[in-house]
Image (cartoon, rainbow, N blue to C red; front, side, top):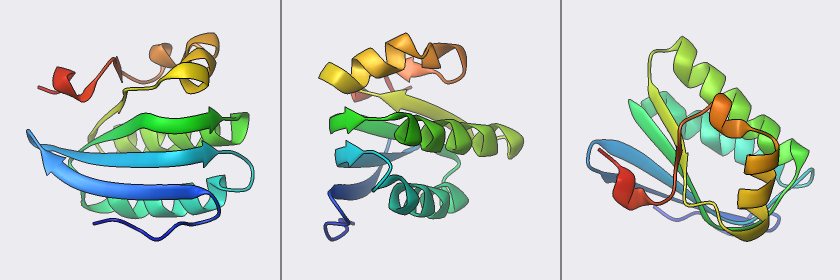
Length: 114
């Protein structure tokens, strides 16, 4: 199901290979992170395994990183699967520089889903 545009961010959720794929498009920044966090918490409530697809995220700030970390911590606490996939460009650089792969499994693409 696709959401309406929410302050520069769009969400799409679907199921594939036993994973809930939550795709984001737009910017993950201080302005959009409250909506992203709220929607992500809702998605995680019903998902057993959640992968956040960042293929269409153009900008990722520290506020966006906090949302990703918070979702990962909750997933771990609840015994759920969690991963980040398909980061491109600037978002991929931010994730690499922040060493996010030490906290959360990272996938180059959704084709890596098992």
